[in-house]
Length: 200
Image (cartoon, rainbow, N blue to C red):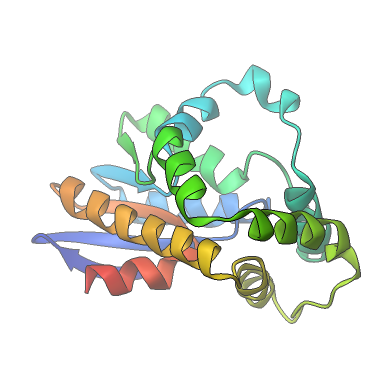
């Protein structure tokens, strides 16, 4: 966990690995230790809303890319969708009456950004990558190493790099806007460094 002062408030940044069941315990421990006045999470408003619809969890069909990611992540423990780290912070905030804010852009803004920067060939490459991913080699020395290696390979083209850098910038601005209380920020590991650079 990384402590950083933003807009005069103490923020505690917790990097998490999406999908890994054991990450939920990490979130629980951080929440219990900090006892935040508010929390923020690297999800879109729509994704955050869906966390409350537990009866629909089983309806979610992962994409080929998500399925390939889960295939490798399973080497480090049980994997679930939606990511247990996000489910846990949602539930803890509900139980403790702590405000939980989404940091990422909404789906319409993301779709526009995607269409603007990701070309047809890049979309084709992503589809091909998803199909061949189970046969590729990744750094499996630790879950953190795998996630970073996976992210680097998935976002190796210019369009996808712009997409993720723009998300990082957007989330950093969201954090600045909502840094009105001491808070816990739960964020996917692969975006953490970029967001912290933006905040610096």
